[in-house]
Length: 129
Image (cartoon, rainbow, N blue to C red; front, side, top):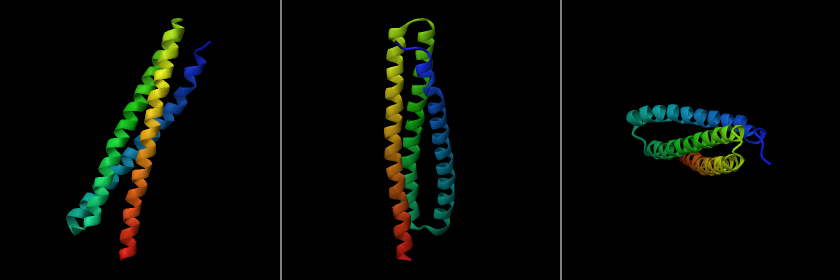
């Protein structure tokens, strides 16, 4: 038997996850602006590669955020269903919420690997100096 406290456990986790995603987005946006300015001044090829990697990461972070928000919405609807004593609907909504959360985390894993590739480009450029 599912009660309201089960989906309520996801609220702080999803909130913190969304906050972390937003922070990643803001840091990457600032880095893109900085690299773009440097690219216009120096015309170095590796900066263009980095900016392209960052573009991919921004795209993935938007998907991470979107799936996280959907998880939050479905979790909220699940709690509402349980309050209205629609246990079956609440269970399905909680399951959907967990699937959206899982999708968000999988995309986060992909984004982390792209981040590592971008750092490798930077390290390779340092080795060439």
